[in-house]
Length: 206
Image 1: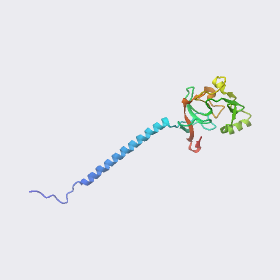
Image 2: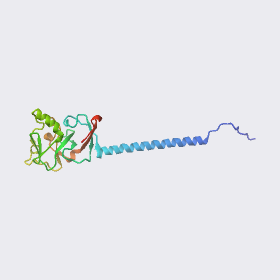
Image 3: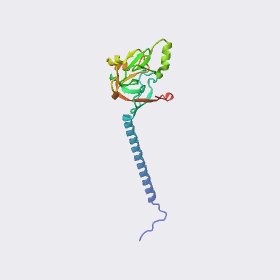
Image 4: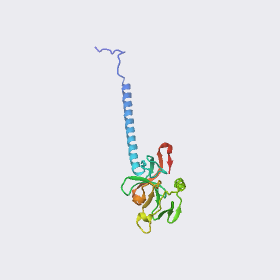
């Protein structure tokens, strides 16, 4: 004789079990999507840092008129190399990397006389040094000792070769630059400094 099931006997609802499984499945899919997204972001970040930009720290006081020791900058690896551009590069002497300012371009001659810059014997004003030059004049001093690109290149003409750049630090008296290690090859230049982003209260574009 078949026993009748008690009408009040509790049974595990199948609908709730299915909902729970679907919910867990959604969480799993969401976790996978977040993981893949994070991986893509990391890969893109690595690729961009290799081919598009760099975020180095300024070391030393060679650029003190424009940058301070410890400043963080944004470097555009695809930036155009122009006169007075700030560039981040590997030093020709092998002593690490530096940030300096392009003064002389390929196929040019550079000469300093009485704190004045001459490119191909034409006077060029360095507006970024106006304050330092004014102070030096008051103190009866010079910020850039007289020199000629011929002295650096050890040639008669002093013309900068193709794909080479003459760079100087803004803190002329104390900067180590092309006057000491020569001109910089284009292949050694990592990129142009576009922005100081740290400290935040001193954010500045170049």
